[in-house]
Each structure stands twice: as structure tokens, then as C-alpha cells.
Image (spheres, rainbow, N blue to C red):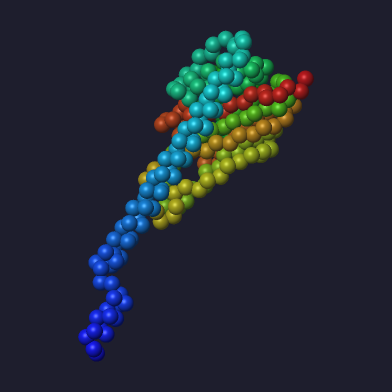
Length: 234
């Protein structure tokens, strides 16, 4: 080919500039860095939003409790932070007619749980594992239990049931200790709540299918049953 023609065609050939050839590994590294940066930014944004929401709720709660002019007398609960927080709530709460806060008994030998008789009850009777309603109305019922399972070679189903007059009204079920997986101990929290209209002498109780796994040693103060009269009917 004529040297002059070859020189004229050379500018049209692809450039051999090293800057135009980026190794595949560099591209992947750059994309990974960008993805991580986006992930960190998103996580930080969500954390800030959550922090703002929690702060707003705390302000509203403080404003609500401060507006109660005459809180009832001080009650003393045995326990740690959870009990102290509940005690503070009960002391300053507007519901004064009927409420209870009980911790589970250390001696559990049947599916129907029993509760410590030295718990707080006001306008409610406790009898044979039952809370017996004395005033009709809408009641908010909360139960929380901690479980410690030393895993056998098979899975274990943990079930918490809230009963009204021996009828199951709400339940929670979770399976722990997967078959074939080497796991020593499993800590599991189960909780359930219910808003129910109750008549005088209605009973509230809790059943646990695998009662032997209820942990009364590690977190004994976190196994609680609490109710309060949300709206009275009389």
C-alpha cells in the first residue's frame, strides 16, 4: 500500500491509548465500591429516620404522662429495668379502675401457666392461674414469655395461647432447632396482645404447649402477664 495512503488511514484506526483499556477487575472493584457506598448511605439514612421517629414518640409520651394531674400512689415492683418501666407507666396512667401486672411462677408443671401472687392487681382477682374480671369493658391484654431450648435432634414448636373463658382468642407459634443443624441453646421470645370486651367474672389465662422450656432463671422478670381496662362499660 502506498505509504501516504497508509498514513492517511491510520487516524481512523482504533486508538491504542492505555486510558481506554480498563481491566475487568478494576471495573468490578469500582462497582463494588459504589454499591457499598450506596448501602452505607441508605443504612445511615434509615437509622436517622428511625432515631427521629423514636424521639418523636418519646416526646409525645412525656407530654401525655405529664398532662395527668394526680397520679396514683407509688407501687414497688420487684425486678429490673422492665419492671421499673412498667411501674412508672402504671403509676402515671389514666386507667385507675382495673389493671394487673404479674410475673410467671418459677414452679411450672402444666401447660396452663401460674403466676406469682405477690404481683400487682387492682380491680382484678387472681385465682388458680386466672385473672378474674370485676368491671366490664374493653381490656388490653399483654403477655410476654422467654424460652430457653436445649436443642434435641429434632425441631421444637413453641406456642403461646391467650385464653378468655377457656377459649383460645390469640396464639403465637414458632419453630426452633432445625433438624440436622448443630445448635446447643436457643433463646426465644414470644409475645402476644389482645383487645377484648369482657364481662364481670370473665377469666384470662395463658397456655404454653412446651412449658418446660419457659426460662424462669435467665430472665425471670421478663415473663409477664399484664392487663388494663381500656374503656369501661358501666
